[in-house]
Length: 357
Image 1 (cartoon, helix red, strand yellow):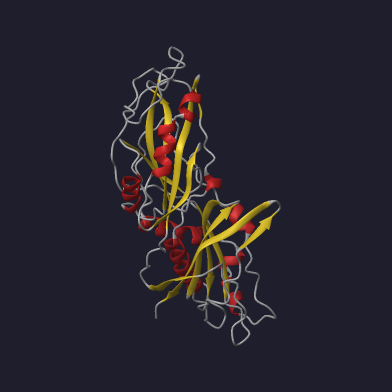
Image 2 (image 1 turned 180 degrees about the horizontal axis):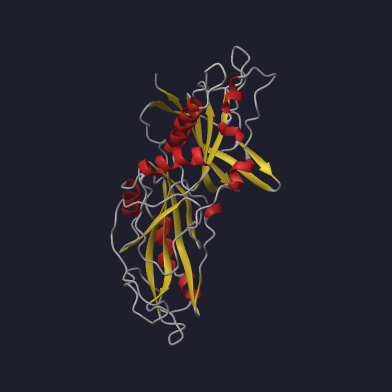
């Protein structure tokens, strides 16, 4: 583990000023990014497989071993797709959405039914609409899963999100898809319209909507009527900790009343926002320190952590965990973001959790 986290015995020493609590870009950039940042183009169902308990155990192991090996787990499953050879002109699952009379990309993108439906769709209670009627869907590290619906139903998509642990946003849209799997013998088949609902472990933003379609052989997949919705509520409570306490920005703590530095270091987890991973990192750090005490037998205990969603250029990137030996709060939540070159890394969903006595 990096010295910033594991050699935390240094955190208890009196120093002239606290160790910097700016974003640790070495930690951020060194962690492997998720391989899935959105649904595959030929998939109509990608059920969410995520277990917070397993993720916490993996986070604990990552702190000790400085590794990150996320694994998906079963949560819900709506349908399965039979495996077959790609490009075999096999019939694709029926698309239930409306389609224009003329089967062209331009006709699809200008079809008024898509735009009217998206612009008039209801926003579910407890959610805010992040964007409306775009020609692209979201693409980010926090992708969780995909479902194909029979109607453009923002409430149904919200219910799917609410049924999954850590889902905090969703994107619903119309997609122009081929009615058979394009291949050498059917490079540009007729189209139908799928209505897709993707789930996300972070908020969705207009900046995250970068998937504006792609080609499957000569068939052009495009998107219309894309709406994004983000939950308004905080993360769930965590066993063994009090909180969450909402902050405006990330904590930038001073020295404590005795002149000691309480900052223990950072652990970063690319992917969806999961404060439970920070709790696991906090506990694992204490466990490591207890096995590697100072010469006098003392060691630092992680008693507080600040978990927040880190975004790069307003696209969700992962969960940032800052660890401390004591609780901090307002008015020390002053780090709202930082530049690295031309890229801006911003703080959102910043919450504090304190170890219970």
